[in-house]
Image (cartoon, rainbow, N blue to C red; front, side, top):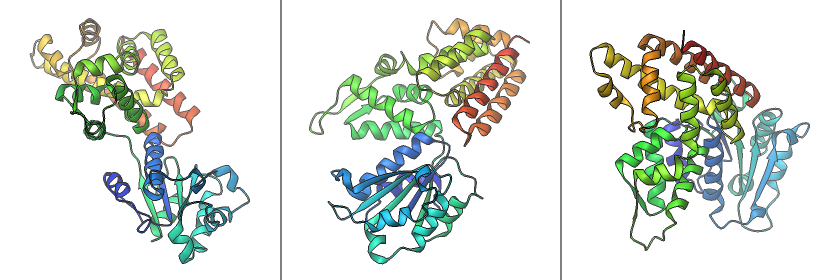
Length: 352
């Protein structure tokens, strides 16, 4: 069966062994979201205090020439606990055939005790694995797409509530602007923010996350790296932009992930330029940037307003959108090259 992306979180939260399908396919361009959803499914199916022996990990390469391996693993009962989960990393190679064999050989005992979870990349609707999971009543396909700003704020607010924290509106706005669109990266940054403030017990009074907390905890790494890249690209500094891409990659942030923040900046830059072209003073047009620009960055953005026009921004956004589409589902090396090429194309255009 197929589930719409916005229903995935609610479906996983309500998952129980008694109602779970025999197979869950988790796929999409948001690989952090795929992994986080898989972890949540595992805990929902086995319980938070499950025994590690109840979980078996299988790489897609292990299924080559062993189409019956998933079925065999599912039929083998765990030494501890009543349920068992088999997590398959990757959806390529022999995974579609192994999943088909597993579903065909299901019996009542196996279907109630075992669950196969497949963590795949971005799959086209025509892929054999998606078609299998979407059409079989004993399977469920869960898509994971990159988050929009509204989704990020909801995720951040919900996470803070579970940690017994509230968050100011300005701090939430800053988070949405600073965080990437990959759920895995978002999760790590939110955890880092809570560690910065200090974990709270449920019995403690609720804590408060402020804009200063966000700036101090996250501003020194995540957004700082994005800001350097964005400003170097928008100012036409080719060598500096190339180095900024390399630094982000070395820190574990692929160039494809940086496309989102760069796109958000150029959308706001286009908005500010459009306001100025209609007669709005530059200082007022700068208010389009949310959260407000840091005083050290403001002169750089003012220079960008002189280098760019709304029309040039539209072309840059077209390049970014094409790059984001091309990167979805592409191998990491190819995705890195495509994203880097797009960013450098825009950098060269800044001073034309």
